[in-house]
Structures are given as structure tokens and as C-alpha cells.
Image 1 (tube, rainbow, N blue to C red):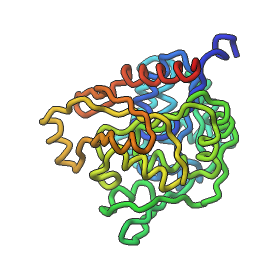
Image 2 (image 1 turned 120 degrees about the vertical axis):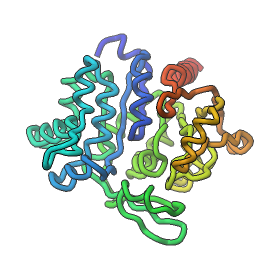
Image 3 (image 1 turned 30 degrees about the horizontal axis):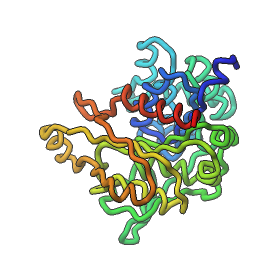
Length: 324
């Protein structure tokens, strides 16, 4: 490792799904030493088929993060994201998922496969699964119903009381624990609260390592609620869910959007059951969270965090924390 790399702030980003990948595209342009710790609870689509048939951890979220952090030609990133639309046995599969499955078979284990693909794609940082094996995510709904499977939970149509892992005693990846313990900053979100963020924090020892760390801890809140997961949630509701699950106060700072979302955009999202997450600043202040609020959204066909602004705020917080 070069002297310049050693001086870079070490940041651990935990999560999964599209939100994490979008944010990492901005963060990788900053002088940061990034480790992404990615959930292994996905069981839908191509990932679910490969997980079931090949007895491997789900590759989809890992593949998204690898592609986001890769230093490759845009065409290569497009190839990794390519999804077959036809062909018996191929339809629905992402080529990147199949490459990770092949590398897992060649190398003998998923963690080595991720490491090798990271090297081949000149990934700016490290990408680690939260655990070396797949886990099953369950949700207990408020009415007592148990829903099994990450992809089934948002479709259940009820209010979630809690989520939990099977096996409950899954071993965290040692490199993930090491990264958290050595971090200058730890970041969770944006992403699906119950199916991307919490599955990482429920891996034994990971949340405890976050609490014990002297790093600055930042939660990036989603811009919109997610139907079937966070219906009508405020920003503080997201943080309360984390506390209810891990029994620990994890975060120092919360980054939220306070920019206006055009009415026509809200109508489009409302048709799918989503609405802007309400910033209840008084509750956050009362619970000891420091709030960073800014206009953080972009809109083309759908809302996305402004990765430049978001990464600027994160980098500034980390620099200020280290130099305090």
C-alpha cells in the first residue's frame, strides 16, 4: 500500500441494493479508502436461482457494488449489468451474476471469487460480503404472520414488526469485522431498511463492532418511503427501527434530503404507494442525532440521490471528524 493510500480516510459502507451502488459511484471519486460490506440475504430473481441451484451466496448485490466501484470502460460495466431477456435457463439472469458464479466454482469459494473479480475490474477499494454464506431473512409482521424470504417481505402487504436471520448465529466475515474496527467512518444507507441495511447489522458482532468503533457513524436516509417496508415512515422511524433491532444507538449523523420534490414526481411515486420521507428534525434533535439536510435529489425517470452532493457531505464530515 502506498503512503498516499495509507493517509486516505478509511470508510466502511454497509448495505445492498441500488441505493448503495449509486452512492458509491460518487464516493469512489473522493480520496477515500473504501470498504463496502454487502448483504447476503437476497433471494429474488437471478440471485435467488443461483443461490438455490448452486448453493452459493447471492451474487446480485455484490455484482452491483463491484460494477459501481470498478475502474473499467463503460462498455465493460454495461456487460456486467447485462440481463438476458430470452433463452431457456438464461432469461432473467445477469451476466455479471453468472461470472461470479463461475469464479466461485473455479476458485472454490465465494469470498475468493469476489476478491478475484475486484482485482480484474480494478475496483477502487474492497467489496466484502457480510458473511461467507447465504442467510435467509424472515419478517414478523405486526399481526404475527411470519414471512420468509427477502424478496417476499415487501410483497406481504402488512406492517413489519421485526426482521431476523436464519441461521441466527451466522459468522461474520473476519475481514468485514477488521474493516469496521479500523475505520475512520462507517456509513449505512441509502437502501431498503429491512431488506438491505438491517440484514447486515443483524449479522452477529457487526453492530457491536460499529458501536465499539471510534469512527464517525453516518446514516443516509432514503428520499422516498418503500411500499411494503417503510410505509409512512419519517426519518426518525428509520433510526428507531435500527435501534429496536440491535438495541444500540449506532449513528452520530443523519444525512437527509430537504429539497422540494416536484408535485408531478410525487404523483408518479404515489401511484406505487411511495411518498417523500418526512424530516422530523425535532425528534432527531431530541434523540441526539446531528442532521445534515440539503437538496440531494436528481430526477430523470425516477428519483436518485445526487451523488456529487452526497459524497461531498460525507467526505467533509469524515475530514472534519479526523481533524477534530
